[in-house]
Image (cartoon, rainbow, N blue to C red):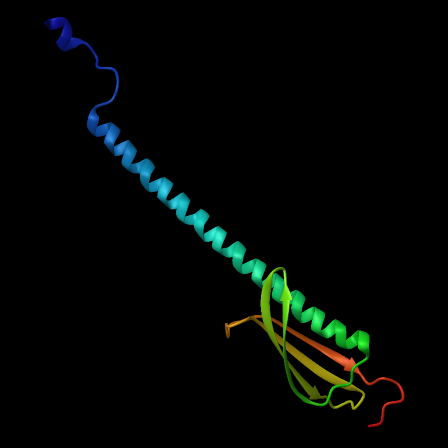
Length: 130
């Protein structure tokens, strides 16, 4: 009996194991929450990237066609990467009569939150009247 009392114990008690498991559970939950936030951010970044491409496409089409739109607003829709977007283009005059400023805002269809903005300038095609 004296041998048993003087012997050192090896291993962990049940309380120590439960505390360690609780600490691991909290750490895993925090890691899962961070991973979930990262996944949501990826979806947002994808939507913003596609919306930026829509804005660039709208402006590039006008530049390629050498358009000279009247000042005002133009709205349209475009599908990019399997997602439907709506865009609004505000054309305004500039102090130099040979240029028009074009501001494009893009949102997901059915949503008012702007995902991308782009500003550009159109040059009056040669031979156009003032």
